[in-house]
Amino acid sequence: MIKGILIDFGGTIDSDGIHWFNAFSEAYALVADIPHELLWDAYVHTERTLGNNPIIGPDYTFRKTLQTKIALQMEYLQLHGIAVPAQDTILDTCYNNVVSHISTVSKPVLQKLHTQYPIVLVTNFYGNMHTVLEEFSLDYLFKYVVESAVVGVRKPDPEIFRLGVKALGLQPEETVMIGDSQEKDILPAQSIGCHTFQITTLSTLDMSVRCFIPSR
Image 1: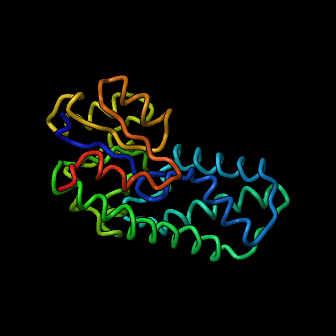
Image 2: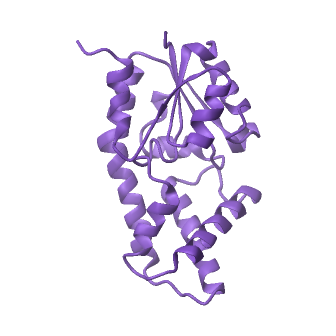
């Protein structure tokens, strides 16, 4: 019997199961024609840079986090001979998509789940998740936040899910992990005994209400 919920943020709450590289690619395509492989390299370089250096401050909003990522991506592209115009267009496109998805899909679902279950956020993020949750008025919906930069453990290490289960005060088999990544969310959560529910690009987050809250 499910008594508590673990949930991912990136690709689950902030988008419709879409990998962030694809979200960036769609935004860049509005202003420039960049080789797929080079843009991927810029994306990976940026994520590694942010993972290895305390660039993102705890007071960074989601928009400022995106702005920092895009600036690093563009620096990488410029070093490889590509100058990308309209940075603000890329930023606005990515950010507005997140705002729309959270307001129309994620927040209503989380509000419904919150009425029935304690929810713990389990996320690979940069130490500013509390600021981001406040930015989107989501902070009150979570019992606890397990954030990789804070706890020192990153997905797909199963230990980060154990921390989430512990925060719920439940046994793994009494919880469900909702996430978009088979490798980083689903399989490691299953490995410690959690039930799982995978988000895909078919707007399946709203299905979680029907799965976990019986209709009346």
